[in-house]
Length: 159
Ligand SMILES: CC(C)(COP(=O)(O)OP(=O)(O)OC[C@H]1O[C@@H](n2cnc3c(N)ncnc32)[C@H](O)[C@@H]1OP(=O)(O)O)[C@@H](O)C(=O)NCCC(=O)NCCS
Image 1 (spheres, helix red, strand yellow):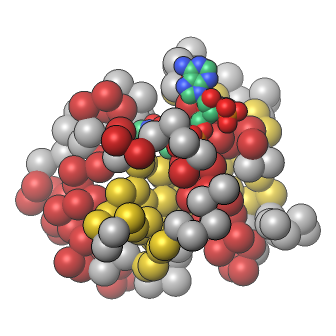
Image 2 (image 1 turned 135 degrees about the horizontal axis):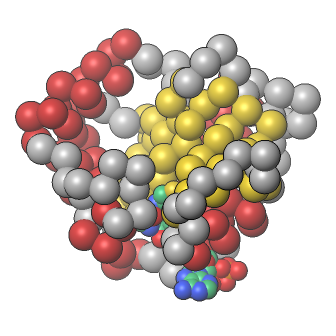
């Protein structure tokens, strides 16, 4: 399913669309920082992220040449990358999020990394896609609101 999903690396022109997806109302409550990000703050973070960290995967996904979602992996230390993912609500619930995350896993396996994601315990769809894409909850890390999902790609390359 979604074999035809188009994607490419994010570029500076995608700034506003990425912010719109990040700030979408229904998902704010599931974010580690649960407030909308201001346009100016986002703009400087986004350009810095693309220019300073060009090799860290930051993918945008398209339908009819329009961005419908993004998935990126930000380096936390030498081998650990934190995954963020967001899909336009109009396209949710049809397997696209799973396809996006599988593509990210494939890209990240090229750099060799342990992927980590912090998933709100009430975010059922997100927990489900991370499990479907081979992530497991690290039960050694306990938090009231968030589960830590991990997938080690260093010795176990992605599909
Ligand atoms: C997380 C997100 C990317 C998932 O995208 P999606 O395209 O809807 O996901 P998929 O359709 O591939 O898979 C969703 C799975 O969750 C299941 N699901 C969704 N809501 C559910 C619910 N309330 N109860 C039970 N299962 C649910 C679906 O049935 C599906 O599982 P299945 O394939 O086994 O049937 C999307 O919901 C999103 O962008 N959310 C807002 C941002 C966000 O929360 N990001 C994650 C931060 S860690």
